[in-house]
Image (cartoon, rainbow, N blue to C red; front, top):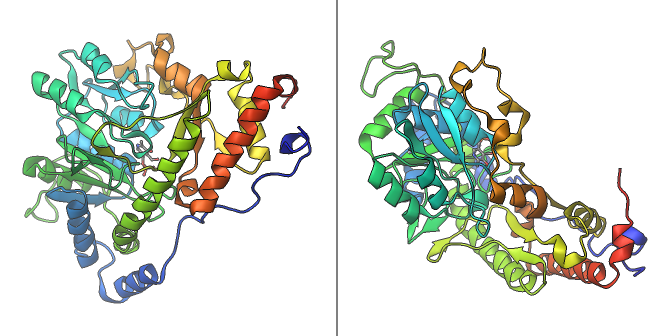
Length: 411
Ligand SMILES: Cc1ncc(COP(=O)(O)O)c(C=O)c1O
């Protein structure tokens, strides 16, 4: 037992995982070229180049780049025709921006429970939440793992409600041979620092629908219309345009992302194969025919297989070994934000988010979810083996001598 780091043994892993973000010569050259030859903003050829290459990369006709994933969501909701007081169905397990963008569009987030095996929104639960006021559905491809787009598309078609994909974490992910983002009416991506492709900050909206594209253009560009005059404003838009420098940082990553995805696939495969052998550790499941972007590695921890040792104790023991595991999101409706002030958000005044109980979301977020950071999936074979060995070392010790772990106290 003395080999367990938290009890004074040697940590299994001391080396860092690959650094992120990653600067390359090609990125530096593109930024330098842009500074010397481009407008840096409006009228930029580099932004046009990025829009067209990103659209191609995501198998979409159009792409508009904006300055964050959050603003991309707001633009997409407005362009989809979501109006004040409308309802938008979103998963309860996601980053806060999926919900805040809905409120920023003066609409009402309606939380759907997730499927425990994938962590993604459950179409069966979505169907039960449709009302006359539902004006959009936002599936999130959580951790890069495509949601059940077939189930959701059936609902969307039956009720005539558009789907806006939140693919903030899912660059390059595929569903039935098509990249995500433009499977529904449109979809959004984030290029914030932690993402698989990053410019520090940034976002994009992709679509195959020319009307939606035109409306997105307008909302992201101060309400201007394509081919309209500079001082002619049709909608309550904003300046959400991306800088050319961000586009310059992103363009070369369209090439490196393809290689990174192969590395992520391999590492995720190794982790899934080995961790699924450990009773009490359950890897997440991807839909048949899909390819996850493997942004984060997530799995489920079942305390009942470890004599009731809590997930939080497991995290501390793993961290002491040099592998950082953590819990990730809380059920969104339990965030303090959702104790809403009726003066500030009058359109939410009849919603009692505190009374919501979504069992799968609560079980996953509050008891079972285990996250590894995105850079862990970019390591080499030996790095991934170290993650596996650490899971094996810690879980077998917890199964053999649970009492020592049950007695651990943390501040
Ligand atoms: C699922 C999801 N949606 C939306 C966003 C918002 O993106 P951004 O941080 O670029 O505004 C993020 C990013 O963190 C995200 O993970």
